Length: 264
Image (cartoon, rainbow, N blue to C red; front, top):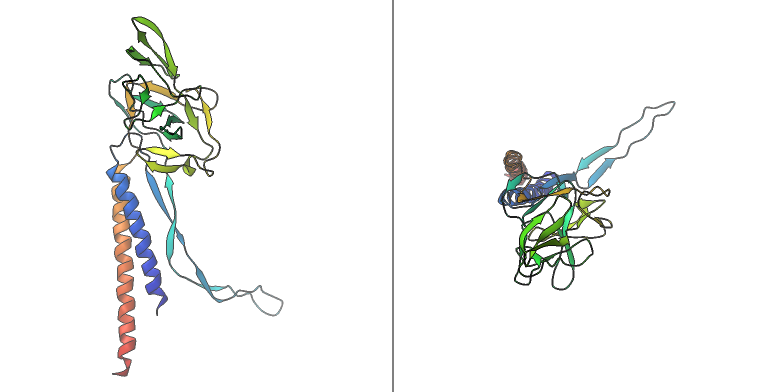
Protein backbone atom coordinates (compact mmCIF):
# COMPACT_ATOMS: atom_id res chain seq x y z
CA UNK A 1 0.00 0.00 0.00
CA UNK A 2 1.08 3.59 -0.55
CA UNK A 3 2.75 5.42 2.35
CA UNK A 4 0.81 8.56 1.45
CA UNK A 5 -2.49 6.90 2.37
CA UNK A 6 -1.35 6.04 5.90
CA UNK A 7 0.23 9.48 6.31
CA UNK A 8 -3.05 11.10 5.29
CA UNK A 9 -4.98 8.98 7.81
CA UNK A 10 -2.72 10.22 10.61
CA UNK A 11 -3.29 13.77 9.34
CA UNK A 12 -7.06 13.25 9.53
CA UNK A 13 -6.77 12.13 13.13
CA UNK A 14 -4.54 15.06 14.08
CA UNK A 15 -6.82 17.65 12.52
CA UNK A 16 -9.85 16.01 14.11
CA UNK A 17 -8.19 16.48 17.50
CA UNK A 18 -7.45 20.11 16.59
CA UNK A 19 -11.11 20.60 15.73
CA UNK A 20 -12.15 19.06 19.06
CA UNK A 21 -9.84 21.39 21.02
CA UNK A 22 -10.92 24.47 19.07
CA UNK A 23 -14.60 23.58 19.48
CA UNK A 24 -14.14 23.29 23.24
CA UNK A 25 -12.45 26.70 23.34
CA UNK A 26 -15.34 28.30 21.48
CA UNK A 27 -17.88 26.55 23.73
CA UNK A 28 -16.19 28.09 26.81
CA UNK A 29 -15.80 31.61 25.44
CA UNK A 30 -18.00 32.96 28.27
CA UNK A 31 -16.84 30.59 31.02
CA UNK A 32 -15.32 32.45 33.98
CA UNK A 33 -11.69 31.57 34.57
CA UNK A 34 -11.40 29.32 31.51
CA UNK A 35 -7.99 29.14 29.87
CA UNK A 36 -7.70 28.42 26.15
CA UNK A 37 -5.93 25.31 24.88
CA UNK A 38 -3.55 25.19 21.92
CA UNK A 39 -2.94 22.14 19.70
CA UNK A 40 0.63 21.43 18.62
CA UNK A 41 1.46 18.90 15.90
CA UNK A 42 4.62 16.90 15.39
CA UNK A 43 6.02 14.60 12.72
CA UNK A 44 5.74 10.89 13.48
CA UNK A 45 8.14 8.16 12.38
CA UNK A 46 10.57 8.73 9.55
CA UNK A 47 11.80 5.87 7.37
CA UNK A 48 15.43 6.05 6.28
CA UNK A 49 15.64 4.89 2.67
CA UNK A 50 19.32 5.64 2.30
CA UNK A 51 21.84 6.56 4.94
CA UNK A 52 24.14 9.54 4.73
CA UNK A 53 27.90 9.70 4.75
CA UNK A 54 30.63 12.24 5.20
CA UNK A 55 32.83 13.32 2.34
CA UNK A 56 36.39 12.10 1.95
CA UNK A 57 39.48 12.86 -0.06
CA UNK A 58 38.28 10.93 -3.10
CA UNK A 59 34.49 11.20 -2.83
CA UNK A 60 31.84 13.68 -1.81
CA UNK A 61 29.41 13.36 1.06
CA UNK A 62 25.91 11.95 0.65
CA UNK A 63 22.89 13.27 2.49
CA UNK A 64 20.45 10.75 3.97
CA UNK A 65 17.20 10.03 2.12
CA UNK A 66 14.22 9.91 4.48
CA UNK A 67 10.48 9.59 4.01
CA UNK A 68 7.99 10.86 6.59
CA UNK A 69 5.10 8.70 7.78
CA UNK A 70 2.54 11.25 8.90
CA UNK A 71 1.79 13.52 11.84
CA UNK A 72 0.46 13.29 15.37
CA UNK A 73 -0.60 15.64 18.17
CA UNK A 74 2.45 16.53 20.25
CA UNK A 75 0.64 18.41 23.00
CA UNK A 76 -2.47 20.33 23.97
CA UNK A 77 -1.02 23.28 25.89
CA UNK A 78 -2.89 25.54 28.30
CA UNK A 79 -2.49 29.28 27.63
CA UNK A 80 -2.45 31.18 30.94
CA UNK A 81 -2.77 34.74 29.68
CA UNK A 82 -4.92 37.14 31.67
CA UNK A 83 -8.63 37.09 30.81
CA UNK A 84 -10.81 40.19 30.65
CA UNK A 85 -12.48 41.36 33.86
CA UNK A 86 -16.26 41.62 34.07
CA UNK A 87 -17.80 43.81 36.76
CA UNK A 88 -20.52 41.98 38.70
CA UNK A 89 -20.96 44.12 41.80
CA UNK A 90 -21.08 41.04 44.10
CA UNK A 91 -18.69 41.43 47.00
CA UNK A 92 -17.79 37.73 46.99
CA UNK A 93 -16.88 37.68 43.29
CA UNK A 94 -13.10 37.97 43.07
CA UNK A 95 -10.74 38.15 40.09
CA UNK A 96 -7.00 37.46 40.23
CA UNK A 97 -4.91 40.19 38.63
CA UNK A 98 -1.68 38.39 37.81
CA UNK A 99 -0.36 34.93 38.58
CA UNK A 100 -1.93 32.47 40.97
CA UNK A 101 -4.86 30.16 41.62
CA UNK A 102 -7.50 30.03 44.31
CA UNK A 103 -7.20 26.95 46.51
CA UNK A 104 -10.47 25.08 47.11
CA UNK A 105 -11.18 21.90 49.03
CA UNK A 106 -13.78 19.17 48.63
CA UNK A 107 -15.55 17.22 51.38
CA UNK A 108 -12.71 14.68 51.48
CA UNK A 109 -10.09 17.34 52.19
CA UNK A 110 -8.55 17.19 48.70
CA UNK A 111 -7.14 20.47 47.37
CA UNK A 112 -7.90 21.77 43.89
CA UNK A 113 -7.00 25.00 42.13
CA UNK A 114 -9.07 27.40 40.05
CA UNK A 115 -9.04 30.84 38.45
CA UNK A 116 -12.81 31.22 38.70
CA UNK A 117 -13.63 33.44 41.67
CA UNK A 118 -17.45 33.26 41.65
CA UNK A 119 -17.74 32.58 45.38
CA UNK A 120 -20.67 32.67 47.74
CA UNK A 121 -21.55 32.03 51.38
CA UNK A 122 -23.47 28.89 52.34
CA UNK A 123 -25.89 28.41 55.26
CA UNK A 124 -23.03 27.46 57.60
CA UNK A 125 -21.06 30.62 56.80
CA UNK A 126 -18.45 28.90 54.59
CA UNK A 127 -16.99 30.71 51.60
CA UNK A 128 -17.72 28.27 48.77
CA UNK A 129 -17.66 27.83 45.00
CA UNK A 130 -20.89 27.26 43.01
CA UNK A 131 -20.18 23.50 43.25
CA UNK A 132 -19.95 23.66 47.06
CA UNK A 133 -16.16 23.38 47.39
CA UNK A 134 -14.80 25.41 50.29
CA UNK A 135 -12.26 28.17 49.69
CA UNK A 136 -9.00 27.66 51.60
CA UNK A 137 -7.41 30.45 53.60
CA UNK A 138 -3.80 31.34 54.30
CA UNK A 139 -3.80 29.04 57.36
CA UNK A 140 -4.51 26.02 55.16
CA UNK A 141 -8.06 25.59 56.47
CA UNK A 142 -11.40 26.38 54.78
CA UNK A 143 -12.58 29.94 55.36
CA UNK A 144 -15.57 30.23 57.69
CA UNK A 145 -17.08 33.72 57.71
CA UNK A 146 -19.65 32.86 60.36
CA UNK A 147 -23.40 32.84 60.21
CA UNK A 148 -25.06 36.22 59.89
CA UNK A 149 -22.00 38.01 58.50
CA UNK A 150 -22.94 41.24 56.70
CA UNK A 151 -21.17 44.00 54.76
CA UNK A 152 -18.59 41.51 53.47
CA UNK A 153 -15.65 43.06 51.62
CA UNK A 154 -12.51 41.49 50.14
CA UNK A 155 -9.35 43.56 49.86
CA UNK A 156 -6.60 43.36 47.21
CA UNK A 157 -4.48 41.33 49.64
CA UNK A 158 -7.27 38.78 50.17
CA UNK A 159 -8.29 40.01 53.61
CA UNK A 160 -12.04 39.47 54.20
CA UNK A 161 -13.78 41.94 56.47
CA UNK A 162 -17.40 42.20 57.57
CA UNK A 163 -19.78 42.68 60.45
CA UNK A 164 -21.15 40.09 62.85
CA UNK A 165 -23.87 41.36 65.18
CA UNK A 166 -23.04 44.86 63.98
CA UNK A 167 -19.38 44.64 65.00
CA UNK A 168 -16.79 45.01 62.23
CA UNK A 169 -13.98 42.46 62.20
CA UNK A 170 -11.65 40.49 59.96
CA UNK A 171 -13.34 37.26 58.93
CA UNK A 172 -10.63 35.47 56.98
CA UNK A 173 -7.73 35.62 54.55
CA UNK A 174 -7.85 34.17 51.02
CA UNK A 175 -4.75 32.29 49.92
CA UNK A 176 -3.35 31.92 46.42
CA UNK A 177 -1.05 29.29 44.96
CA UNK A 178 1.24 29.30 41.97
CA UNK A 179 3.30 26.61 40.26
CA UNK A 180 6.68 26.57 38.49
CA UNK A 181 4.95 24.93 35.50
CA UNK A 182 1.21 25.73 35.48
CA UNK A 183 0.92 23.98 32.12
CA UNK A 184 1.50 20.71 33.98
CA UNK A 185 -1.78 21.01 35.92
CA UNK A 186 -4.47 18.46 35.18
CA UNK A 187 -7.95 19.71 34.30
CA UNK A 188 -10.62 17.83 36.25
CA UNK A 189 -13.71 19.75 35.09
CA UNK A 190 -15.79 22.61 36.51
CA UNK A 191 -12.84 24.98 36.03
CA UNK A 192 -10.71 23.02 38.54
CA UNK A 193 -7.12 21.88 38.25
CA UNK A 194 -5.36 19.10 40.11
CA UNK A 195 -1.67 19.41 40.93
CA UNK A 196 0.52 16.68 39.49
CA UNK A 197 4.22 16.03 39.36
CA UNK A 198 4.60 17.93 36.09
CA UNK A 199 3.36 21.19 37.64
CA UNK A 200 5.91 21.23 40.45
CA UNK A 201 5.46 22.05 44.11
CA UNK A 202 2.71 24.57 44.92
CA UNK A 203 3.88 27.90 46.34
CA UNK A 204 1.10 29.15 48.62
CA UNK A 205 0.90 32.67 50.02
CA UNK A 206 -1.23 35.76 50.34
CA UNK A 207 -2.21 37.79 47.24
CA UNK A 208 0.33 40.39 46.21
CA UNK A 209 3.18 39.05 48.35
CA UNK A 210 6.83 38.61 47.37
CA UNK A 211 6.23 35.14 45.91
CA UNK A 212 5.01 36.60 42.62
CA UNK A 213 1.33 36.11 43.39
CA UNK A 214 -1.14 38.53 41.83
CA UNK A 215 -3.56 40.78 43.66
CA UNK A 216 -7.32 40.44 43.98
CA UNK A 217 -10.08 42.64 42.62
CA UNK A 218 -13.39 42.30 44.42
CA UNK A 219 -16.71 42.69 42.63
CA UNK A 220 -15.35 41.37 39.32
CA UNK A 221 -14.82 38.04 37.60
CA UNK A 222 -12.00 37.00 35.29
CA UNK A 223 -13.61 35.78 32.10
CA UNK A 224 -12.25 33.37 29.51
CA UNK A 225 -9.09 34.33 27.63
CA UNK A 226 -10.39 32.74 24.41
CA UNK A 227 -9.77 34.94 21.35
CA UNK A 228 -12.66 34.23 18.98
CA UNK A 229 -10.81 35.65 15.97
CA UNK A 230 -7.93 33.20 16.53
CA UNK A 231 -10.29 30.31 17.20
CA UNK A 232 -12.28 30.90 14.00
CA UNK A 233 -8.98 31.00 12.11
CA UNK A 234 -8.01 27.70 13.72
CA UNK A 235 -11.38 26.24 12.68
CA UNK A 236 -10.65 27.14 9.06
CA UNK A 237 -7.13 25.71 9.29
CA UNK A 238 -8.42 22.47 10.82
CA UNK A 239 -11.12 22.15 8.17
CA UNK A 240 -8.76 22.81 5.28
CA UNK A 241 -6.13 20.47 6.71
CA UNK A 242 -8.76 17.75 7.05
CA UNK A 243 -9.91 18.33 3.46
CA UNK A 244 -6.33 18.26 2.12
CA UNK A 245 -5.61 14.94 3.82
CA UNK A 246 -8.90 13.56 2.51
CA UNK A 247 -7.83 14.60 -1.00
CA UNK A 248 -4.51 12.80 -0.48
CA UNK A 249 -6.39 9.59 0.33
CA UNK A 250 -8.52 10.05 -2.79
CA UNK A 251 -5.46 10.57 -4.97
CA UNK A 252 -3.74 7.52 -3.43
CA UNK A 253 -6.86 5.44 -4.09
CA UNK A 254 -6.84 6.51 -7.75
CA UNK A 255 -3.21 5.43 -8.07
CA UNK A 256 -4.03 2.04 -6.58
CA UNK A 257 -6.99 1.73 -8.95
CA UNK A 258 -4.72 2.38 -11.92
CA UNK A 259 -2.34 -0.30 -10.62
CA UNK A 260 -5.18 -2.83 -10.30
CA UNK A 261 -6.37 -2.02 -13.84
CA UNK A 262 -2.96 -2.53 -15.46
CA UNK A 263 -3.89 -6.09 -16.51
CA UNK A 264 -6.93 -5.00 -18.50
